[in-house]
Length: 306
Ligand code: ADP
Ligand code: MG
Image (cartoon, rainbow, N blue to C red):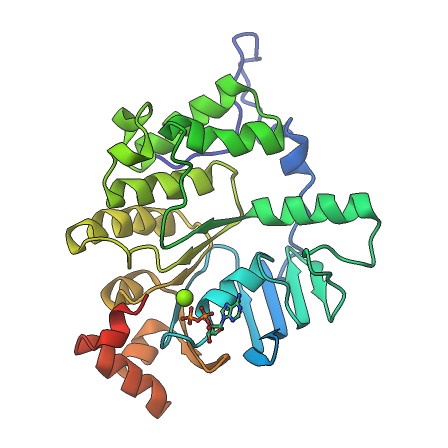
């Protein structure tokens, strides 16, 4: 498996001297704000989310650095999915602030129900939201592939439709990603012809096709038969080894221990504790964390809660 780069292949007429980092011709990518030096990729400050009277997120503050792998653990109903969904604005935060790439995306209650920012013009709102969402790839528990499309169309559609990439370029990239997830022979298959593990690897390839700056995973293996979990975790492990920034909600504790730079324990809508996996798993400071981990490791039903 190879790391994809954004460098363009040299054309036959190119000079013998290699040109380093040519300007990318893709206006979509070059439009991205550059993270100021020393700034985290994502900053979240006092994030709250209520559904009607139900106060689910109760003040989340954290930062995610470029290249960092953050694993979120915690009991069912604690707000893990809501946190991920607020990060990529599938849910509109009730209050709090989010910066992405140094740019303030959410400020207090400035977001409208559809996730756009009321302080901006209509056009700027749409543009910002689209750019922001496609900078964050999301992989769900239940794959969400389009059933009526082949695998290669599933992967290449968003780059073609949203970024205006040509069919040829989008399919070439899709094939590279299929190689990377180990499924090049499935390009012309339909999702119904694939196993759950294969579908989830395709869903990861589809998220990567937009060249996101961060990937969010919401329990990517908990809907899979046990024998398929490993192949999906292996793909995620390869991404981590290649410094993809990732936020992963999972109950796979061995995997978390291996890949996480940092583990967040989320319960009752707050981060009760966070730290490197060695500390959270071996020597957590909070009794609640200890209690949760002992149940998970003992295989309590909570561990597989959907
Ligand atoms: P987790 O992923 O940690 O299991 P969730 O973020 O899915 O937790 O849910 C946290 C709480 O928010 C739960 O009580 C859930 O029922 C509630 N919740 C989540 N989404 C919605 C929604 N769209 N409308 C109302 N309540 C919701
Ligand atoms: Mg969840």
